[in-house]
Length: 212
Image (cartoon, rainbow, N blue to C red):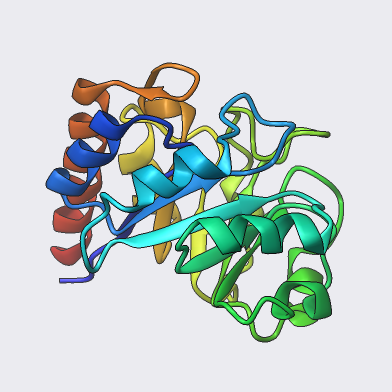
């Protein structure tokens, strides 16, 4: 059975990190973009990342940050992967010598595949609604029909929740899904019931797709 990978992003609380790992998420995201309401200090992220067990990927999210800002975080926080949500080109993304993901704004008029071609060494592409000036989709889904079938390692984001992730996976068949506000009780704090429900719906979609 093909298994959709799951990333919970915007982690700020130790209890949320522990529960997410217990529930079996594949990756956790820590936001270092000051435009986000879920921005986390490097010292706090360092303590949370230290609690993440083996085989759960620790992702740091940045938005058009100066290289020295990214390096300062990396000196303090043991991250496995970087995620870039701004206008960063391939040379910028690759200078930190870590695997990286590149976000693609899907709500504009640009060709998504242009970003794919411009970042040939990216490990995956986060397909997000991208509210202007924000670090992500702002809890707003985009038109999933705009996703090119050729998008490699597509990571679907933007407005996902337990209410729509089943339909999202059934429609898009992404490599992974990435959720922030759809599992929160308030910005930066996750809801245990929504976390559990989200994972249940992802697995239900996987089961349904495997029966096709």
